[in-house]
Amino acid sequence: MEKKIFAIGALTMLMAAGCSSAPVRPGPGFGDANAQNLAIQVVNPKPDLTGKEIPDYAGRRDALAIERYETGKIHKPVALRTTSGVISGVTGATEQSP
Image: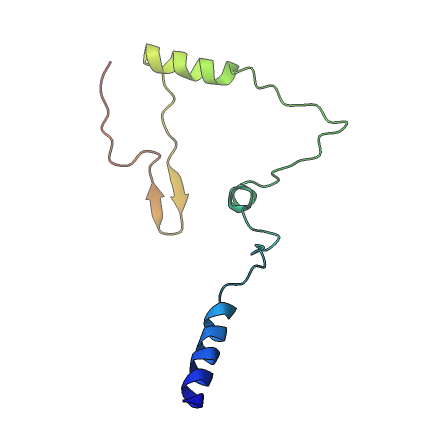
């Protein structure tokens, strides 16, 4: 009978050990997945621009590209030469006359 009580007591203590009241604290880098992905894909995600001129992002180049597209005066892609041959700038596309 004493063995049975001892076994029940030991089992109860083992089960209670799983109910810890200590908070679970994640590591210091937990939750930084977006920052990590950005850092991998960008040369310098937080550049030091003090004393440097900020590039012009007025969209003039994009506006000219859209205008060329709409008027049918797009620039033809340039073929690239590689060690295995020539790769065209556009693959699988066909030319359409305006």
